Length: 124
Image (tube, rainbow, N blue to C red; front, side, top):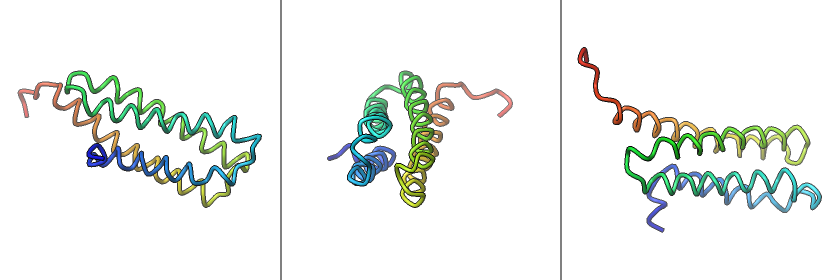
């Protein structure tokens, strides 16, 4: 898949694979509530990154901001999986580490899009 040449997309793809691999340790009752919502958010993040990668520079920022908002909700949901003991601390930390890395990559991408949209200041 050529789209996986995009590092942030590759990392989001890995997040989903890791998350999906943990599904069997979650009780059936919990699998269809918080777990399903978190899984859908990860899929939304992947979709948003892929769509943004195909947009022109001027169209990217609003899409990246939506992805960032979804990533922030996902962070809260992952914290809830730890606090409600859906997952043990080690598994939660692994997922949070990947989400944080995606967040840093997304922040860098958004910063570069903002810088290319804003004309340089005359004093620089």
